[in-house]
Length: 429
Image (cartoon, rainbow, N blue to C red; front, top):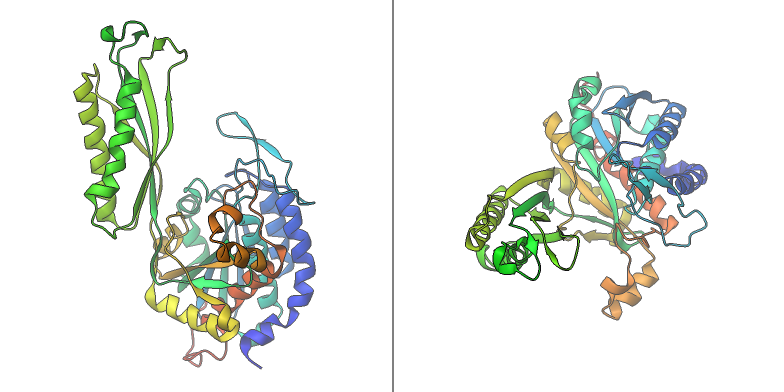
């Protein structure tokens, strides 16, 4: 009997409470930095599994430490926050929750990115590991992180002393549910998620009556020219094959059809995979904005503000190969190559703070038959709901089992008794 088989022997038992917990978390989502109820549920489950529990780390973050003698120390991470989205799935446990955000705005709330699944999978993996201590040795550090959607949750936990709290770790592992066939797992070495930068641009004009545009400097026209010119940055300033995304997600100006406003505000989002490309794109944005304002005779310089930065997720080759081999041994043909994604994450802030390598993989959450039909018809983009959609809802099984199993199998690639080099004494803290 293999180590993973020993640990996963109680999966049927764990599945019962996992499914109930998942439905509860999905029905009661919480916005970033407001994950109080979720954190309480996590802490309760960690205590039941025999973990050392720390709450309030970085605000609402929770850390569970499962010690089992000497050996490697593996960090596993799950994110907890939900999104300001009104759910449209018609599930019996669909969210009807609302919350007030940091700006005082009342919003609908939904787990539209699968963080409820991530939490449930990690809690199940810890329960399984705690119930089969004879099969492994070392320490599991389980980090339940707030505010991934804002990009500052991991950094907040680090700033609140996470590394001192748990001590050194040897490797960090993380997974995310994606619109791929349920039951599949996918890995990739190297850059797997892009960095992300948001930028606020305010261009200033000279307002006046819409009937007398000659007496004004129209910031709406300036903003429109900027939007058009920005479309050339990726197409004409980056080498073919170098991926990047530049999106203008918001353009706001004016209050009435016959009033030329004083200013216009644009919100931009940039996705890149290298610091060099990031610099090229951000520099081009500033150059274009300033040049268009100058060309229009704007009375004031534009304002440019960067915010909400997410780092590149760069999977370590050796760690990724080790996890991929363990997945292949356990899942066989269900293991896929993960496409490079232009989504972004702040998970890598954790291993960077600990100074350790990491890998980040995907698990499928889409009904396999639906996925195959959509793929055959060339309608994946139309028929398969993606993360952040009001229709995004991973099929409960086999997604939950797969995510739980993947965490166990990946952790055991370091912690399992049968791993090469396990006869050497490890460190215990």
